[in-house]
Amino acid sequence: MHLLILGGTGRVGSKIVEQALADGHRVSVLARNLGNLGNLRTLGSNGNLGSIESIGNIGNLENVENLENVENAEKVKIQAGGLTLLQGDACLLADLRLAVDGVDAVISCLGTDGGTVLTTSIPLLIAVMKEQGIRRIITVGTAGILQSREYPHLLRYESPDSRRSSTRAAEEHRKAWELLACSGLDWTLVCPTYLPDGERLGSYRFEKDYLPDGGTSISTADTADFTYAQLQQKDFIGCRVGLAY
Image (cartoon, rainbow, N blue to C red):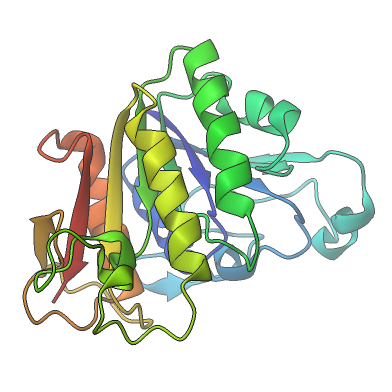
């Protein structure tokens, strides 16, 4: 399978990249700055972390002597084994069109980035997926857009007992969800609660439309594990899924 992973340099996305490559899939990652690959720099295999020049079993970037310098280049494409790194912006139609070419499914771990990244990128992504006949998309959102247990007619971020000091990010995630819901694509929206860094335990709770009762956290690694697993699952197509320990 060929996957496009948006947000693939982040805390959750980089772990999905690692799992997909370990399973023998081809993976494309779209990043604005290939000189700042974030968590991809510590990808490794079997728990042995390495540099970007030797990412696990996927081969070496032998043709790139100084990766830090590519940030000022024009559009760059780097291939290493099953991994393709594409320089581009998920908020630009042309970049997304190139990134989805030939892929079978899309996983998006994009955050709000303090602005309108989601509401800008998601309509464009839906459009190019439809152009190229790609149906499956899995995105990572926030538990704030799940239903409130105490006030089922409200989302968690809208409920009177919400502890959020600002609803801006939750509102951005909500708009992205609404766009997916009317897209006609086979979408799943994974909604983790508080996301500390941590190792994969492989044991967690999930629930359609609601956060599992009493759940207060879920590691980035287990969020990646569940999100990646949805590629082979059909139980939550067209659904939000709450995720917590």
